[in-house]
Image (cartoon, rainbow, N blue to C red; front, side, top):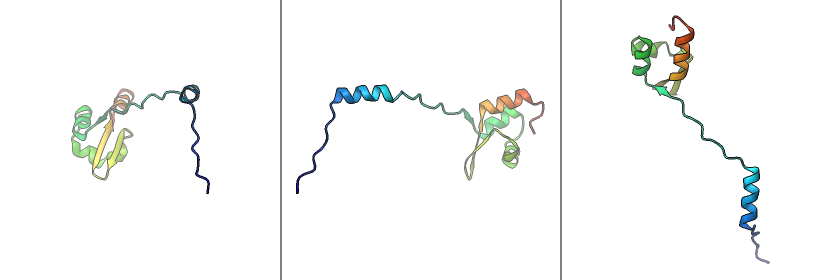
Length: 86
């Protein structure tokens, strides 16, 4: 059987092709997530209330079964637009 031959592409040609077709992608910024204690302090309520009413707040991010975080930007926007959060 004949051996499989590899196709070689000239490096400058490939680099030029990639430069034209692939635009650099900026990394996504990670949201500023607050812990329960930090969010409770900003909202002026106890952490237990945040745990009990997590589904009432649109800025809640459930990371896992036992971990909640709160989006700082959305929390601040909610505080600016509403007079009462809970």
